[in-house]
Length: 351
Image (cartoon, rainbow, N blue to C red; front, side, top):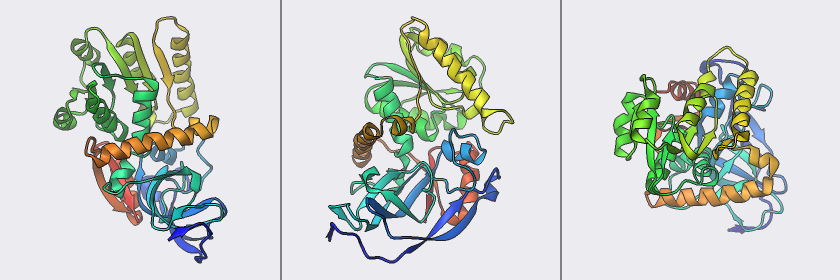
């Protein structure tokens, strides 16, 4: 039934995961909470898949920029089906499968979402696989094509090539004819080679020399989420017009240090590189910044990029791995696995 008026469904009891404070994964809690009917412009989505990404891992330690005060429900994104709509949401069908980026609140069985933030998920793509390309996939797509403007025949360096973002970066690059050098632990090298990626052990001595041997004229772009020292090495490996896209400080997780101070040092170094007239493009990519600065453009680009990614998934051009699936009730185990750095792909939560 095509709905142009609000549904009259009663309130729904949602199961939610709560991050109560600076706790270990075992300290995550679950609760039940009644959700009201959707307000004007909202829809109620029954979650089918949500995921654990770097953002939630950083939030657990209080290290994610501009995260809300504890306690709150984490969950950067989700895939689910619309079960109710509010006023002013014409043309929305009950049962339609959609994806949404929420920043927080996605780790729940039911979520109220502004209808304008939804992107349709096509038939032929499972909810779990759709979840793998939400924030991770859009991050990879936008860094590769909107920031670095990578082209066939170029060579890029991807740090953490086995991770959630790194895997999709590699798959997208190889699909579009871009050569990839990827850093990862040796246990992931066979899988990377099967993708057409040249793997390098990120802990082995002489990493920079190994990259130079593979790309003697320098790399066209580097994608680095590890932190300041890694970014400095990546910058030195660029060719004359190469791009450095920094998108995280993963090396600081688990350390007793000031995240703000570390982040400011990194941004200061990027700023120094920006003002040097060397022809390099240097930036810090933040997925959420676009939503804050240019919300309409953010939504338009998100819909365009997700639609392109879903189509690549549907035809099998990319196939980001699902590392494991856990029910919400087992979120502590799921979080521990995601933070172990031993898995390839994304850890998924289901109702």
